[in-house]
Length: 349
Image 1 (tube, rainbow, N blue to C red):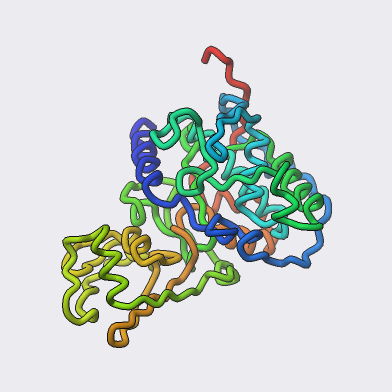
Image 2 (image 1 turned 120 degrees about the vertical axis):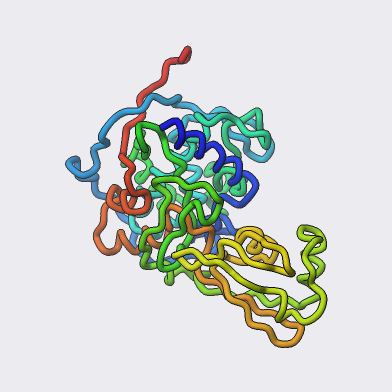
């Protein structure tokens, strides 16, 4: 347990230096609605209550019921469940099946509780979490942003999000009794990535699992075209030791791929570079990429959208459409974890 916690804290530090996820909302936030509206004509109705036999959490976990959030540079004290509503609104489309939205709600709540218990980072020492997806999670202030985000459907769409949060109120995922690092991304490839292959830390519940359905994401397949000079200019700032002279065909060597297809590391200009570093350098949707070279023009083609670790939001959509419950979806993407219910933590604890 102690070893997992230490590894988790180290992974959190790494995640702070890299985008926590890459979704398909507005400007690379995570799921579908603002960025690429999905199933916009789907009916919105009242969601069914979860089946008690399947959805009752196995245990309880003491945690604070409030969270301090940095929003647009302003510190806010919020009820935890209200914070989860704002995160889910920023992370997933209300057009998705209710079970997928419930799964996202549990993941968002779990990640927030983990962050609170891990301690405040240097990026925002005055708050537990922030509204920057690169550090924490997307955040939508529904009082001011709902209409701009959802237009005439704002009231109905907000109801869908709030219902999913109510249906899962207080539920978090745990491993050996502690809240997990419930990271997620928009669309994994055919399989999710292991945390060890992406960030270098092996987490028992962040392993590679099958993830059908990601191909429905509008950004599942994408291409970035760059000239050799553009790549040299970018590398000069972040990888000055890379030798990018001569023919670009000689720049890329000896790539090591994960079982899910992402590049773990590769030789780039004679320097060993991690896949996530290459993804950031080239501005790619994922580390699962190939390169085609035509003279001084390089085309990078990617599969998947995001880091691919943990819950795949489009994979959750597909699973829900096949009849899986949110508990089943979460158990698949975070193997070995259990649902638990939060209980109020004493102020002196």
